[in-house]
Image (tube, rainbow, N blue to C red):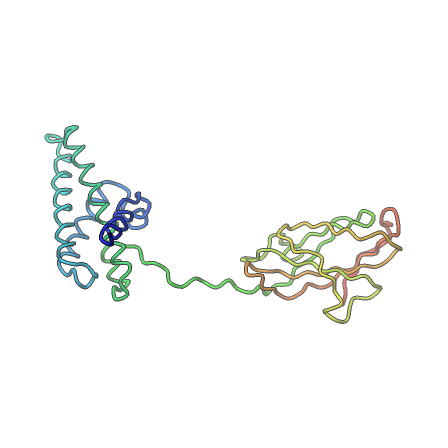
Amino acid sequence: MAFALIARGLNFWAEMGDTMCKTYMPTTDAGAVDWSSKFATLINATPNIYGLTSIQTSEFGILNGNLQTAWQKIVNPATKTKVTVADKNAALKAMKKAARYLVLVIQGQPTVTDGQKIELGLTVRRTEHSPIPVPTQKPFIRVMKVDGRTVKIRLQQDAVRRAKPAQVAGAAVFTYVGPLPPTSVDQWTFLSNTTRPTFDIIFAPGQAQIVWITAFWQNAKDESGPASAAISVSLPATGALPKTEKLKIAA
């Protein structure tokens, strides 16, 4: 029973499609044939350093030999026929099937160096990922429109560049109602997270008042950068914002 499960597991990996080969094996038949020849030569010379057995490398050597023979027949116009082309296709498929399993074994060996993998024509897996930096820029808040109690803002890099800074996923927006900007961070009211550059802020009905808006960039890990300069907008109790009203930037 155990042997059957192991055999089934090995067969699963061996039967997988060409997807696993695409990262290391050339896509052209000529390239794959050349890859097979070099791979077979190296693993047959010193099987143990790659975590392979001599039986495994000998079996692959036979498959590689069949492929090289079949390939020579189709590159020669005198021997290229439907039969020899079919033989080449079968030999190429058998080589790839065997190679997938051997490559999995090699990639799983901690003692096989990146240099050895490159020499074999394999992909060197990345073991470390570049960290996502915490945003360092402050957003620039541009008021696009004030319609009654609705304020449309745009969050951008600065007064000129509209795009978000590199590796910034979105922003968190905060508001405050009062004649002066808040003196403490905890006085701000969290409004929403947004990944869109433009954002509508709808303030509840009320008397004419001054509202303040600030925001900070966030990366994909929800790590926050510095807060923007707070801007203020004078809202009317009803109707549109008078044309004489001006936006003010907090010091």
